[in-house]
Amino acid sequence: MRDLFRQPTFIVGFVLLSLVAIAVIFGPWLAPYDPQAFHPRARLQPPSAAFLLGTDQFGRDLLSRLLIGARATVLFGVGATALGVAAGGLIGLVAGVSAGAVDAVIMRILDGLVAVPDLLFALLIVTILGNGMQNALLAVAIAFTPGLARIARSTVLSLRGRDYVLAARARGEGPAWVILCEVLPNAIGPVIIEATIRVAFAVMIGATLGFLGLGAQPPSTEWGLMIASARQFMARNIWTVLVPSVAIAMVALGFNLLGDALRDHLDPRARR
Amino acid sequence: MTAGWLLRRLGTIVLVLLIVSFTVFGITQLLPGNAAVMILGEFATADQRHAMELAMGLNDPWYQQYGHWLGNILRGDWGMSAGLSRPVASLVGDALGRSAILAGATLVTVCLVATPIGVAGALLRGTVFDLVIGLVAYLGASVPEFVTATLLLVVVAGPDTGWLPAGGFTPAADGLGQFALHMVLPVATLSLILVAHLSRQIRSEMGEVLGSDYIRAAQVKGLTRTRIVLVHALRNALAPAVAVLSLDVGYLLGGILVVEEVFAWPGLGRLLIYAVQNRDLVVMQAATLVMAAAYTMSNLAADIIIAKLDPRVHYA
Image (tube, rainbow over the protein chains, first blue to last red):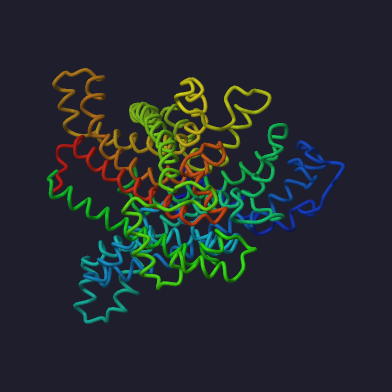
């Protein structure tokens, strides 16, 4: 752990994500205004003492919207990734442990699904499920599942022949025990690293879906939607798009840095 | 690389596309409201709908419908777009051409920009230059395309500056200058993340290669530094970079969806978003299939390039 704090990537990522976590946890109490309250006499104001980050086209306080929207945006990424890791991990585990025909069939199907870009996959699923935050979350989770399943499977395969797994088998442990107590704890590292970096992607895809009008719906304070609805006014009021843009970049940057630092920490061979 | 390997790879691609086609077909089957409703509109009578469903075979079992649809696709009959009143094959064909221009220009830009940055990063490891490039790379990987695109629009194509066209597409036949100008912003947006990713990759591969024995041997032999870096090291650092780039093509295809939408570039991505927003099923199916096909073919191309770059790689 002390090693981790010596890495600049980890420190910067940790600081960024701490700021984000504060917004997620305490956002509603920190927000100076009601995020939906109109201030008709202060529309499209640049940052000032009254409105620290300025206001949007309805005179809504951007700082308040940002703080409230942190939950929708960040929890979306974390939730979608967690769901994708659970589903993908399970499929990968089954494929890796069962081997043979089951493995071959699962892998061929995964190969097919991986050939569809994540964003396109999520877009197609949102079309079935309908627009909205929860559906978008489910769509991103499903889109992530094939990729994560492949990573989980390859990790399981690399562990299957290890001495301690063979030793457990030789001791006469049942397959369930071997999977849960020997394989799973050792497979979890690579999956967590992949998941951390994927949260950054999930946040970006969620914001993109919101931007395209397929994710969060107005008057949600989701950050992608904030950018989409401010675009009309951006030429003269650049801060209306700049504020949510910087926020999205901060979250994604934080998870990217943290993921890379964790990978370097857990797998010293990858350190270059 | 043997003919057998190539045949088997093509076989896998066919299998992958079959699975994709099945998934896409399944997704369109699950959508509420069928194609008959979409063509006739909401004011159609029940009788009209029934007649249309019979004519389109929508009441057949799903596997018959799938077989029928797949057969038509293979025969080149991709159906008619209900919303755009155009045969889907020519619609998708035109869009694919325009997207290919964008993707091709992006890949060329990425290679031309990322290679020198990566090489310089490896040679100047630990200097301020390396640090700045590293920071920019992290930042580039953390900003979604629609944000980059939006900010570029404000700064470079806003009403105050207006240096570049804010969007649209001019065919090359109508003037090469305008054609190129319209490409600058979309290509710049798409390139940013990929340059960040690829230059990091080249930097770390290059770093590893420069520390290897044969480079030391070349130095002992008295070769110039330029020759060692450009001829001996770069070639071996490029093969893994191509592998990374081929994976990035999937990312590029996702990016094309957004970038074409923001810059009103009438390619496959914009067509797909139109199809999704207007529930134009036939267009959605065809465009998705074509995108998946492009991705798998680009992976095959990358495998072949890697084998050409690195004589140690043998496919049998």
